[in-house]
Length: 340
Image (cartoon, rainbow, N blue to C red; front, side, top):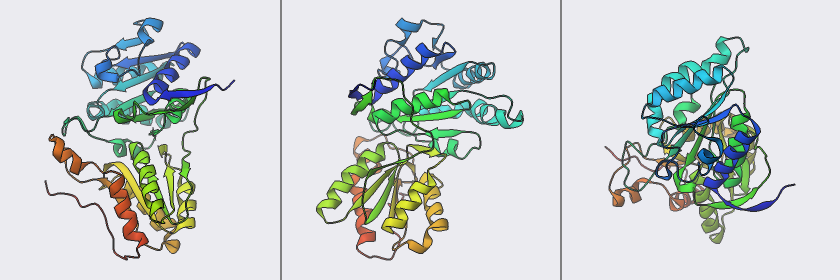
């Protein structure tokens, strides 16, 4: 039976891991700080006490070694969840993620799968600066053989984590620490959210706002502000970055004729550029205005709290972009990158 109750985003992830480890003895969690709330918040609460150190493995600081060991375990039939509490340091593990896990199924003629979840946590604000605040999801989305999911809501966080663990091939699960305290209705039962399917969070007719992860919440705030101004915005939550729900995006744009893309990563060569290219290629004839993007400026994250306020886009940036294209200005407006 589906019992609905309010649950924090972080605890929805926690429940998903509890339930999958209970259901499948081949599932295990490995990574730095899985014993420590300072590293992973309460996403790992109770796991060590329930499943023991053989399945909840707190490791030394060696991202490449940890990830490589987990990939090897997956090749032999285990189902590891590898957590990187700072997504920035997944860069140390690109070799096992990209050269090994992503290619393994293809190089073995579809006969050997790598059922592994690479879980990366984005940390932003809090004066964490350039080496602890990066959203590098576009790097993984660029690689054949990797799926990339980025849930914005607690319901999807649980459902996509379960789907990622159940998937026979590698999935990069990306969350945002700033989402952890947000609550949503989450069923107590085991369920999954289909990888590759986005969702319309708000129906609208004047402009499409396609958003990723934390920016979904900013897009919803923006839509309320715009509604008061007489602009009816449709908000699309991608949920999965790759494979992207292209038809959902295109159908929405064909209805509204305008689109603003809001991403948590940098503007250049990222997810917002991919969506802009998709629309330009397949829905150019219906566009009433240029495709606009709201994303991070092409500059490393600052350490100053005051500079962070200018660096990270918010609902107001989305509103400003929508105003540009609904007021009939036929010029491209984008949040300008600062010279670094």
